[in-house]
Image (cartoon, rainbow, N blue to C red; front, side, top):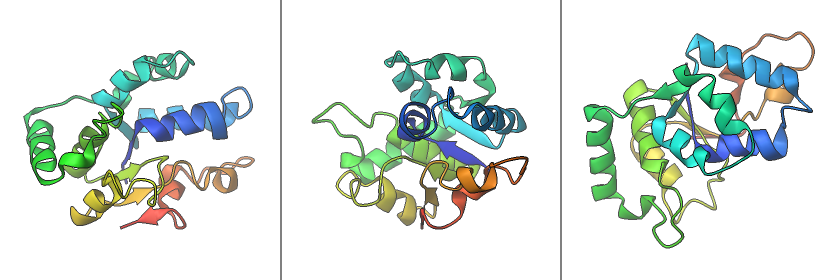
Length: 168
C-alpha cells in the first residue's frame, strides 16, 4: 500500500506530534518507508513546505524520491477536480494550494491520502468528501505509530491506514 502525505500531515508530525528530536527512531522509520516507496507526496506539498523554516523541507529535500512529479495525468485529474469542486482550494486564506495535487497524486498511485486535517474541519473545503467520492481512502497522520513503532516492532507504515482515522 502507498500513502500520499499532505502538507498538514508532515507539519503535524514534525512540529507538533512527533518532533524528530524527541522521536528520532520514528523519523528513521519514515525515511525507510520513503526509500521503500511506501510514502509519497506531490511536488506541490514540497513547494508549500518551502515556506516553513523548521527543518522539514530539508528532511524531504534529502529524500527527493518521496516526490511525485506533476505529469499530464495528474494535471488532468487536478483540472477535473477543480471543475467539480471549485472550493477544494481555500482561495480566501490562500491555503490548501496543494490539496488537489495530493488527491490527484493519490488517485493516480491508488494511494491512501494521509492528512492532518480532520473530516469535520475540512467538510467546507471538501478534501474528505472529494476523496470519498473518488474512491480514495484518507487517514489521519501517523495514527498508529506509537503502537506499531514502539521498541523493535517493524509493522510499517501500513498501520497509518488502520481505523480509527480512516475515512472512505
